[in-house]
Length: 109
Image 1 (cartoon, one colour):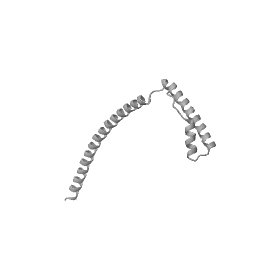
Image 2 (cartoon, one colour):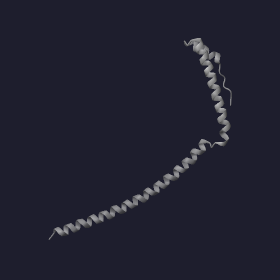
Image 3 (cartoon, one colour):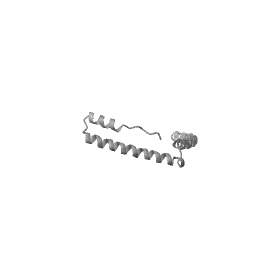
Image 4 (cartoon, helix red, strand yellow):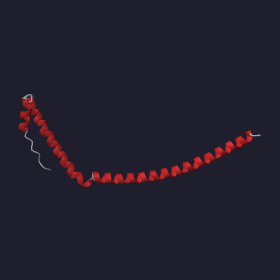
């Protein structure tokens, strides 16, 4: 990891110039340095562990492939469902027509 240059003296001077008391500026500079050291350690740890972890971009590609497969399966099921619905609507229409015809024949003497 490349070292980041942090001018703590310049940072403290800017804080004091902005109206922060000198002691508070010194504490804030110390805390910033501690935070930056902590972050650098965490980044180094993650980079060290990175060899055993699957890369997120590979994982997302695998998941996108699975989503595509599921989408194709859903489309196939929807097409089958649509065909079934058309068939049932035709059967219901024929039964309805037959019932109306029987009622008309019953009512006509």
